[in-house]
Image (cartoon, rainbow, N blue to C red; front, top):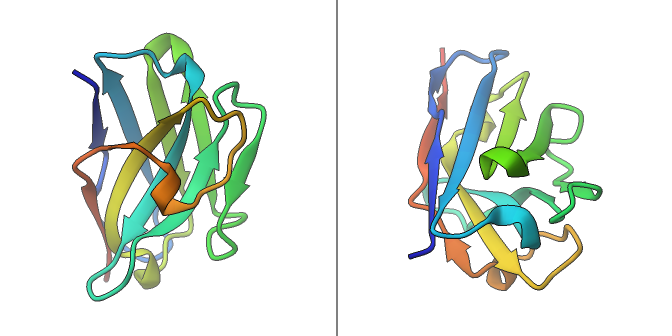
Length: 125
């Protein structure tokens, strides 16, 4: 059974950092593009950052460029999202998702097939 599990969320002060992890089980991530998405209360789910299956291509939303870094360790079957200089507007539930048979790093929500349950990130003083 294909499963993605996010971890690393929590409460952090503005300007702080968190690292989210997305661990896969039941399949190998080697042939899947992976994306991080977020959904704040009352808002639509949006793409934050995505990475190609090889790791050679990445994509970031304008709102997080220069602050967030996506990476993957296929040997550990895990994808990471390092989030620095966090702002209150980054508060949301963060999800990771996977799509197979796609070699790019675009982040349209409907394209991604397999989703984790999400992890809450709250940025507040």
